[in-house]
Image (cartoon, rainbow, N blue to C red; front, top):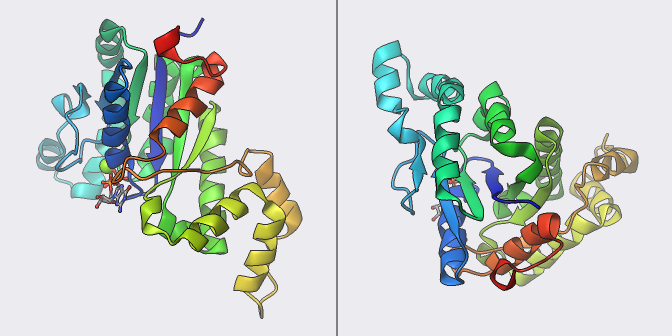
Length: 257
Ligand SMILES: Nc1nc2c(ncn2[C@@H]2O[C@H](COP(=O)(O)OP(=O)(O)OP(=O)(O)O)[C@@H](O)[C@H]2O)c(=O)[nH]1
Ligand SMILES: [Mg+2]
């Protein structure tokens, strides 16, 4: 029996992690589910939610910049590495909540969480076998075949890195025209369509992206139906919840458990 589920929102800068954290916790609370939020981004400004646990209680970018004489980017890297020292204490606090879902908002720059050792250490220390990564697809990037393929490659690298169950989420889908949204959703589940589209995007250049290459991506679950959501309008939250429940509880609804 799985207890707490750790759900990590990971995605490129500005893809909507913090806003989705807010929208999703809001939806969960409104529907009577027990959940908390953890902010792992020491550089967050104007957080749209009040985190239950906040990395800024341990690590402050301004202090690091002053102490180490580095700029904001250097401070982010040092902060990411410092996270490792706070995992044990953070775990104790998280455990004390005895909640069903722990929702993690990760740092703006995805590579800080994905590439530095501390991100992996955190996921493993808190329990990889009850974790889910929600990978966010930015709608503006997803609009072109080369853009969505790039995101699929990033998603595949995140999967290689963490090796935990995965959800693919198309954020801010209210910004897309209906036709664009349909096109992106088709590409996400049908790599043959995507292969046709990438050759359409580069008609004069012979693309090195072969169908074999796209099929390799498939083996990492890239050909997975995207879950379209909008944090602004609040839709898609139930779809994220149902997909997450399906992974660990076979779709069982907590409220009826
Ligand atoms: N229209 C629309 N805008 C959104 C939605 N979600 C987020 N945004 C906007 O997208 C921008 C980035 O959102 P954030 O939630 O800060 O994204 P993030 O991934 O946390 O960004 P960083 O942590 O700074 O990398 C903000 O201006 C949000 O208001 C959405 O569902 N619809
Ligand atoms: Mg953020």
